[in-house]
Amino acid sequence: MSIPLIQIDHNKCITCYACVRVCPVKAIVVKQNQEFPDVIHSRCIGCGSCFQSCSPKAITYRDSKEATRSLLVSEAKVAAIIDPSISGEFHDITDYRKFVKMIQTLGFDYVSEVSFGVDLIGKQYADLFTNFLGKFYITTCCPPIVSLIEKYHPGLIDNLAPIINPMTATAKVIHKTYGNDVKVVFIGPCIGAKEEALRFDGDGKVDEVLTFTELREMFVEADVNENALEYSEFDDPIGFKGSIYPIGNGILQASSLDESILQGSIITTKGKGSIMEAVVEFEDSIDYIRKHFNLFYCEGCLMGPGTSAGGKKFIRKTLVIDYANKRLKRFDHERWTKDMASFADLDLKRTFINDDQRLPPPSEERVQEVLKIIGKNEGTADMGCGSCGYLSCTQFAKAVANGLARPDMCITYSLKSKQDYIKTLRVTNDKLAKTQHALQESEKLARQEQIVAQDALETNVNMLKKLPMAIVVVDENLKIVRSNDSFVNLLGEDAAEINDVIPGLIGADLKTLLPFQFYKLFSYVLTSNEDVIGRDVHIGDRLLNVSVFPVKKNKFVGGVIRDMYLPEVRKEEVISRVSEVIDQNLELVQKIAFLLGEGAATTEKMLNSIIESHKASGKEPI
Image (tube, rainbow, N blue to C red; front, side, top):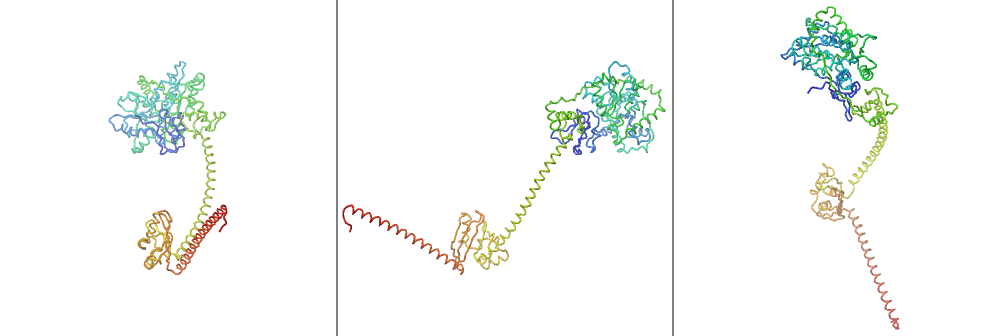
């Protein structure tokens, strides 16, 4: 399978879509949900506009240098056939004979000009246009023009001049002169010629196509420099007026056809914009125009995509003319006439194929939907700024509907979307600013609350330390997480020494500090989550009153311990317990009184009942 002519490196692509805009047939597309452009190779006509427009050099064309080197190191003889526009490209070569020697130094066995092939097909055009039978033709020297007609104007295929291009004609000359086994490499300014060469076989076969820029690269890589070389001439046969072929109407000069405005029957047009318009007018109005069309996609062959970037058209044109004049001063016309006669029997005819790549028109509803999306109405649909690469908004909408483009390629749509986005972003930023201000206020309040909480914590800790009763909090493993000085003092001197090293005995195991009957109260509360309040525990000659309560279920418990033998605690406890006894006695007296009251009431009821019963019997009470 052949490598595609045009490739796009997405790693270099900056998605400027310049290639999409310049492609005359919209073979480069940007599909929905796709960031980078891609080439639909079946739609490509090989004009090279995309390659020339790509500033980041993300677009490249099929390289033929390696394949050419393989031919040069093979056992086969290899001939280089050179497009006449080489004199405009290699302005830095002082003499064309040095240039010929440089090509030979690369390993080519023969070096010939395509100008003789131009002379041959020029005669064919002269015969075709002179023997006019009412049918008008389009010249077929330019490969992109042929491809454009075959793919997008198939109705004009019968109007394509059935004549091969100069490259193929020269290949036939080489094979007839040096044998069919000779390999042929065309060197020229056209990348479309790389595809055109694949269409011919037999004596018209061209094995590889090098562009001028590829040839320059090969010179550099092989360290070939004219300063170290002698002169050498092109191999026979030598062309005549075919050497001015690169200047658009050069083929007509080689044909000796009348180009006068009043009497001539041929219109020459070159350049992308002009030829696209010319093809449409030829198709629509040829019966009115009544002229043959000589078309070249580039500015002749002077400014082809295979030439060095930055070349100046009129300087190149001048160099080609100067070179032709220089050659014609010592031109052997008699020899040329004999050569033309010797190759008169070559078959220079060709046929064409219908490779229709036109897309079916989308529905009107879908087109109107796209126009609405990009903000166009019936009054503006036929207008267009051209920034998307289409002549009108309607054409662009059809391309979007056919999946060849995206709405955001419309600059108006993009600007509107950007403005809407900026508005949304501004509103979002305002909301964000307000939220940020609220957050700052919240953070400020939180810091203040944190300071208050920290102060409260420090106060509570200090108070906890100074409380006369012992306080301790332990975790689920009965490890101390907080305690106060009274708890440390309660445990004795050993605990005090530990406290000097580990303040508050944090991390100490309660089981190592207190006896079983003491810490089992903490274990019980951890598992049951029930309070143990006011439990008296004897440890040696000390009586401790203990209250244990859950702080966090099954995680932390706290204990309050009082030494009942301390004077202040004893006094407090006596008062508390006397008060408790008094309260209990009062409650008992109240219950007795209640019971006595209930008994008296019952006795009274019984006596009253007896009295009433006695009265009823007529007896006096005792």
